[in-house]
Image 1 (tube, rainbow, N blue to C red):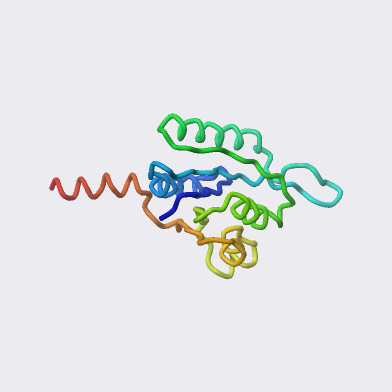
Image 2 (image 1 turned 135 degrees about the horizontal axis):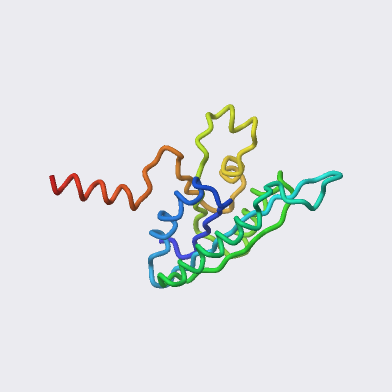
Length: 157
């Protein structure tokens, strides 16, 4: 069903929690898994500087994750998109459109709806503008690997 999967990551644990789901969706032999990271830049007088001070470390971590995916046999590539902080969702949606994505997989931070609106969630914005379905993994969910381990342990008892 899904042949072109985009995993949008900011390098956080919330995004990492979505990776096992992206891997499951991309497990078909002809599937392609695109990893996209939005390097959010400050605007105004501070224009051009990353919003996150540890941006270099985040990009290195994400490139490492892509190397691991390739080692596991996934057809994957990474794209770092530089954008104004408020434009990240649009840049991800444009990227998904450009590669013909069937689904975008993202993690959520678990903010209450009002807090998410006030803070401006990339995931919430994607739900409105994406050219394809958005598979949003809630902060409270168990990741695929831990859930499988728990189910196995429950059956063994």
